[in-house]
Image (cartoon, rainbow, N blue to C red; front, top):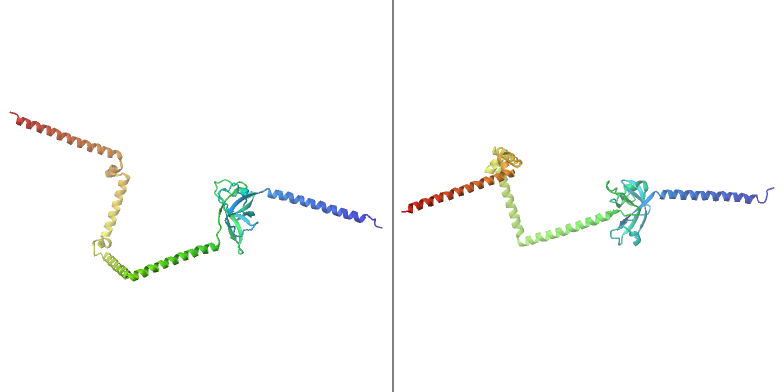
Length: 290
C-alpha cells in the first residue's frame, strides 16, 4: 500500500530541482551577458536622415562586421555632451562596437548609412580613419557623411535637365532675334569667308609658295629646327652660368667689377677733360698778355 505523503514528496523534489535549474540558468545568463557587454563600447553619430535604419543593423569597417546599431533617437540636451555641430532636427545613432575592434575606430573616422543586399537592408559603414589618429573614446562622437539614395541622384538629374532646357530656350531666343535683324545671314557669310581664307592659307603653306610655306615644306624646315635646337642649347648654358655671357649674367661679383671698371673709366675721362680745359685756358691767357 502506498503511503499518503509519497506523492507530495515527489512533487516537492521535482519542484526543487526545477527551481535550482532555473536559478543556475539565470545566473549563467547574467554572468555571460555581463561578460559580453563588458567587452563592448559605444560611440555616437549624428545624421539628418537615417533612411530607414533599424536598431540591430550591423556596423561594418572595411567589409567586416564590428558592431551593431543599439539605438536611434532624437537626442535630449543631456545626450549632446561633446557634440560640436548643429543638432536641431537631427537623429542620434548609437553604435555598439565590439571591444576587439575598438582600436579601428579613430577620431577622424566617419560613419555613413548605406544599402546592402537585394532587399535594400540599411547598414552603417565606418571608415577606419588614418593610421596616425588616436582611437576614439567611449561615448564620444564620430563624424558622419550623409547618405544618398537613388532619388537624390534623380533629383540632381532633374536639375540638370531643367538647366539644359533653360539654356535651349535662351539659345532659341537669341537665334530668333538674330534672324529677325538679319544678323544670322551676316554671321554665316563671315564664317564661310573665314573658312575659305583658312583653307587657302593652309593650301599655300602645304605647297610652299610663300616664305613660311617654303620653310615648313622645303629643306629650310630642317635648318630652322637645327637652329632652334642650337639656340636652346646656348640659352641653357647661359642659364647655368657657363661661358663669358653666362658668367656676366649670373655672377654678381663680375657684375660689380664691371660697374667699378666702367665708373673708373668715366671718372678718368672727366679728369682728362678738365686737364685739357685748364691747359686751353692757360694758353689763351698767355696769348692775351702784352
